[in-house]
Length: 340
Image (cartoon, rainbow, N blue to C red; front, side, top):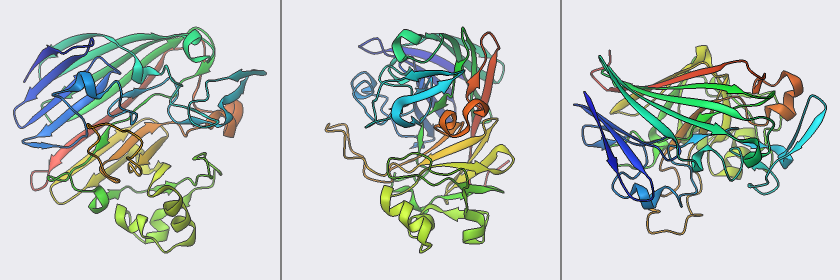
């Protein structure tokens, strides 16, 4: 198991880790994952060869670290300790993913640390209040670790100068199909699959989710069965968005997604997972845009978007000044027939 760094143009470095059966690639631009191959099958969406041209114009946040706040904040405003904060409106009337100067657009300093059985990449930066209009600056470490068991772990370590919001996540898109066909055949599984409903502007409308396990009578549900559900509530949501773009509560902080070839296991200490099935791929007018709807799916481990406006001072995304923040999520890939 070894790592090497390849420098492309525009300041983009690729950190490539080779673990025999699997290979994984990260970049300093957005502290993002670029590629994850199991033998010859790339199980994430991305571009290694032309990363220096692909990522800076890509509007879909492929593989990027998102922050300081993942998801939408309604009307780009929130109140904290009696003060109202006004954010950039970069998604219609709303703020999304921390605004136009979010972490996905930043170059990170980094260090590669090779250890027995694993390789760590420690990305560092400072989020500045003057750039995103949230209160306080945040010193941030994002640690990507890849180990000999084909597990990719993300750790976030942060300290803020003021009481503020912090809701980081990674916007990786997975596709476990060998032919990169649409992900409708993938099956999601957990002991709880509660889906929060969205209003006409992708904002969580209610804190009373729909219990999909109860609706479908199973803890294991194919994406296509959700897309094609005849349940009135689910059908309305799928019709509105062309698929899933919803926060979920999952059971025991873990879930799996699988097809006939692979199983992906996710474990997290974050309270929610946002699943997005890449429903509209048409907004990027580029020769690089080879993607059709449902080309991939995200598993964004985070607090429920807009929690500050839904829950006020009880919002889990609130962090206190000077108090260390820590969060951890891991994704582990298994080839069917070789599960451990």
